[in-house]
Image (tube, rainbow, N blue to C red; front, top):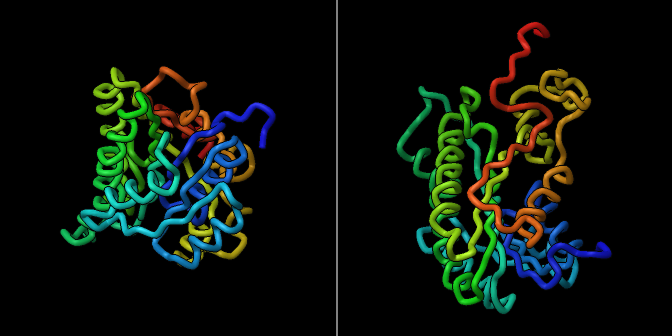
Length: 262
């Protein structure tokens, strides 16, 4: 734990936190003095992660795609922690889809987790936030919200919806001292991303060959690069800022023009 922990005594739910960015955010919450709910859908992975993170972590399994899943997760989290101070909407799915692959079923599946669940989670958390006079929400978005790659059509749309929700609720709830901010994360190396790249035909050492235009630092972002930003926006240090979309990338996301380097 740091000498001046940013989240001392705070009770935080991090959705989708058994691996990748979510797991590292959960670990950072604990390092900064908080208690955390580790959430996922696979009980064995949840139990393993919570055990590895230690006594400040509690695991809960809930399917966020179910209509009543978000409300159930908030209820169980608040019961386990004795209340709720912050929420990180990290859970998300990203099946590849282009315009020729869109189906009603895929659209509903992706939006249920990536867009519907976050707003339902915030809705269910509001009574707890209102009871204590404040709360903090951090939505984990993506730079794909601005446009997105051609084979991430529905995913990109869902992150665009999340971005609009962040700004809308940041405006609507500011007077109640409930802050809603978003991190639009760039290309990040995780175990899931590695498996995705391998499935798409790239070699095992693909990370060593990412073009500099995508990784000016020499490599992709890692989850530990993301987690401290999430903790900052959960903490009182970021008060009273709300409704902001913060880009986490190695280069300017909007308006960048590197044609001369191609």
